[in-house]
Image (cartoon, rainbow, N blue to C red; front, side, top):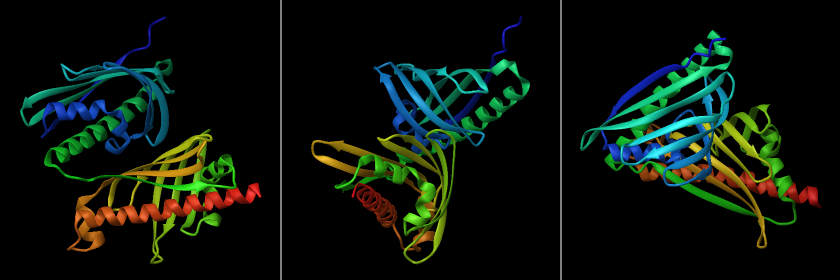
Length: 316
């Protein structure tokens, strides 16, 4: 019986940034959800200076997939080898390598190599994987170039902040359930007009939400949420408002000797080009940072306050 065929592909891009800067972005998987469009969430299982074990949730052909990988970091040669330990069908095996080559002091070339096998060596499954790898590799390399070149230009487009609401008189599990049950938000939250939520796999949700602004207007966002009962819910917006190129967040549910609390953490990459259109021709990047922070903080704090009230009501 013949062995399943191993397929190989390579994608390449040139970047107007030093090779070391580009390599550092590839190494820093904590920033991948903000940097790479397909990546929803990444967690370290274990790591050392040259090797790490990570778990990744990402979209592939509009489906959410999760897998664990080993990465081997060569800081001298600017290479990162990776190999999936647990793949998801239709992928039977997947690996590859990031290679960063110096063109000049301010320019570099990135090569992204993949090798893979399809389940049962099925032609349709192979075509699905090829399409997903091609789409994701193109998106990742383009986003990597943008992030590296913006960092090189000194653009301050990254915004991270958090808000916390104390939870007294209620249970942390009930507060978690309130945030987890986003399909009920239209009847529970004043700023949510409508939601459509699906959960095809336990703990992996897709959420389309129509949100009301204080002026009465609405906007629609689409997110993927990864739920870890009753500890945290992490999410990434795949469809963002105009002022944001990327938006990721975390709902954290914590309980210790100091009490219980809910924390909302937002990380945003601002869309500088949209600032004049959305906020007016005289608006600055600082204005955009303040606007986005106020809007997101207002809505997430409202959600947390209602979650606390809900938990208190159940505990009464």
